[in-house]
Amino acid sequence: MMGHVVSQRDSRFKKLGKEDLDYFKSVLSESRVLVSKEMGGNADPTELDTFNTDWLSKYVGHSQVVLFPTSAQEVSKVLKYCNENTIAVCVQGGNTGLVGGSVPVFDEVVLSLSKMDKVRSLDKDSGALVCDAGCILESLDDYVGEFGFTMPIDLGAKGSCHIGGNVSTNAGGIRYLRYGSLHGSVLGLEVVLPDGTIINNLSTLRKDSTGYDIKQLFVGAEGTIGVVTGVSIATARRPTSVNVAVLGVNSYQDVKNTYIQSRKDLCEILSAFEFWDARCMDTVLTGFNTSNPLSGDYPFYVLIETSGSNDEHDEAVEKTMENGLVQDGTLAQGKTQISKMWSLREGIPTVLAQTGATYKYDISIPINQLYDIVHDTEVRLENAGIYKKDAAPSENYPVKSVNGYGHIGDGNLHLNIVADKFDDKITDLLEPFVYEWVENVAGSVSAEHGLGIMKPECLKYTKNDQIVSVMRNIKNMFDPNGIMNPYKYLPENK
Ligand code: FAD
Ligand code: 2HG
Ligand code: ZN
Image (cartoon, rainbow, N blue to C red; front, side, top):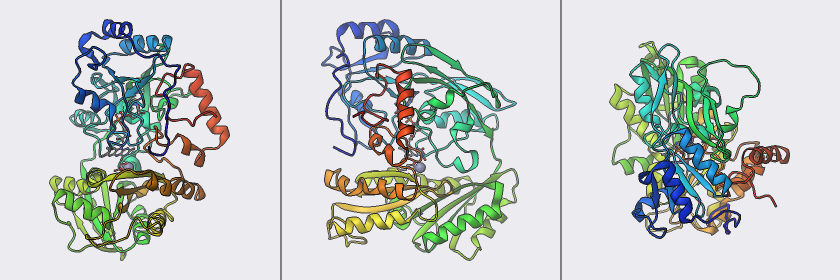
């Protein structure tokens, strides 16, 4: 259907039989092996659907079996068996990924980390947290919050995504501006390789310069070379003083210049700088049945957050609101208003997905040109006669809206196109158009969501042949039988 299409199951992979199910049950116990009725089990079909369908309902697999290990040792036994019997495996965390990596394509066994959800330790001096990979991000933040710490990553899917999923996708999110990449905050990992080897590298050291940094290979590996079962991560001190303001501005250039000015004025206290356009705002206000926190409507909105330990920072934020570029601004008074303002930004993906089939492009672009692609995409779809900007409600076009929002502080745009339904004709207009556009400005076709099933064939727009070849060698070294998350991540080897 969409983008990268895999039409044929790889015949090298074994079709599961009773003997395989018996083995899985012997390792995990009957209750932690979910089997479809067709295969003699008693899984409720809707239960299996949730593991086969991605968050966007765009990608649907056909797995009949879901496994729920509770320890690295169990993962090791399962993987070793799958490797020896050439059984394909799809690793699944919270299943909030947006590139179809977390769901099977055909009948791969789903290995769910959802029952590996224990905190192992928290060093109350350094803030180093060690936990199972299946811990939910928000639960971890609540846990470390009790000791005055905060997770160095935060994203709209925090209530469902796992820390192991975050590591495996190298997720970015709304705190990236402050705490940087997971490549920096992950201190160590426990990983199970396809042959069953458990690599225990759960170091809690901040510094360690002893040779190749193996864990980095698993940050962003999307379940293609092993299963992350444990994570050691540096948490940060929880800021005691947080200020959030929503601003209204007249143009993208004003968004950009406000960002540049804010960095200068707010320096180290600036902790987030997000933006969204008027169409996102209209959709989210309607979806949440709420009103604009500003007194008027604007072409662009900015959410600016400062955090630190000084209660007087609100004055600095107020100064930003008077920079001459900002038309209107409102500073949140208290925690309830802060979370309401954040929900306007974080709610955009969910509300857009409720309005139709959403084509998502998560791209890195130099901030000067960041919003140009939204205009160019609109023009392209208008010229094709399938979209009209500001169409009257009575006019019915297959493409309903073209939206831009994202993490401007990180040069990361989310271009979302909402249509009546997913349709190859729309895909063909968008791809490779978007990817070539990104290549022309030396951007990245995936800023933070990864490659999954959606983007293997797009890798070439961002990575050259030599790099792809090294990636392939790494994959083959760890997973010579290709059982881990097949059909995804790397382009087909023609
Ligand atoms: P899954 O979706 O289950 O899996 C993602 C990939 O990782 C798959 O390839 C899977 O095989 C692999 N995987 C999962 N767990 C493991 C493991 N333990 N070992 C090995 N491989 C594993 N992403 C951002 O970067 N920034 C955002 O701001 C952001 N906001 C979002 C907001 C919403 C509303 C939604 C729905 C998604 C958002 N995402 C965002 C995307 C998604 O939440 C992230 O990619 C997240 O890190 C995925 O975690 P997960 O546990 O759901 O992983
Ligand atoms: C966000 O920043 C997420 O809200 C999701 O990365 C972006 O859905 C998207 O396109
Ligand atoms: Zn994002």
